[in-house]
Length: 433
Ligand SMILES: O=C(O)C1=C[C@@H](OP(=O)(O)O)[C@@H](O)[C@H](O)C1
Ligand SMILES: C=C(OP(=O)(O)O)C(=O)O
Image 1 (spheres, rainbow, N blue to C red):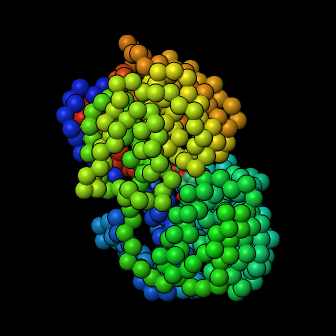
Image 2: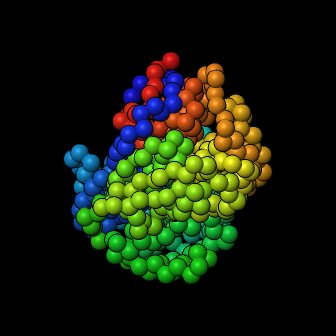
């Protein structure tokens, strides 16, 4: 993929299009982690080829896990939790939060000093609460650069305590990481969690653990009982990514074009599946036929007040849609967005302002002054802040307004390298500039 800036003009061909959504990176990373310590060989299919998943596979190979790739399928040769063939003790997670949090936990099963590191903004994203919990579990964790961030060194003799408290307010990824390694503790784990956020991601973790044979008791996301156990290898198909799909539903919403979207599971536990309910509240109709989903846009987009704490990733898609609503909207529950690839509310505020949309940003919410009549006469450059979701959100806006030059478009490879190809297929016109 080239990284020339993309100048996007608005959609002019409104015939029905199709879009196939790639596999979920959240599900893929959980399936990879669990398969790596399962008994036997797991066969994963529909694995997305995005940077965050590639970094995970690379790290597993460094830890001596055999991962045999065949197209979008992969065989993972589980080691039953015994890391006896470690090749490289430094794991580079690039800019992937989930990958780094999960691997920091996995490193504590390795009985060798492992360094978990990364690049760019990841070196500033918080991991302290997870490390504090690991320290309380008798794992030795040291910060090698910035306090509370990767790179961290993790050493453990696997003499784990049997209970621990995790602060769940900053990220659910810490809880997911601990849940997935806990079956390998000699007494299992009683995990208590305070102020949990992004809960659907915890449901996803517990569900996939269950598929691989470990049943977790979840007491209202405030405590979990994880038995001592072993995962059993599985044949496991990764379902399509609802966060990735949100941009294509958004394009339908903003342009009126019908896109038949496939690859998604309508009963998915992914929290971002709820994006359809929100689009309905904004006035859209949803059609579902043989696992193909399409959004029929309303004439005017209704303003909305909603809490999206359970859907942090698709909150940006909704904010950018509400920029064109008839009225003032407010989205709350967004305190975690400052700890993502960039400070997302600040980034959205800056770039929406450039196109004439006003927003007010608070610590955990954003107020959006929608403008359903907005047009752009001149080209505006949009910064993407090394954030895939900024590029995808503004491509969505460009499908309606045209005249947007998206800078550093390659950022989409973090979760969906196919993004620009799919855009082209559904009729988005862009030139490199
Ligand atoms: O567990 C996961 O797969 C994820 C959890 C969420 O993070 P937080 O729990 O930090 O909100 C989400 O933003 C991220 O993209 C993926
Ligand atoms: C926040 C995200 O991912 P991560 O935390 O895994 O970097 C994301 O994909 O939007």
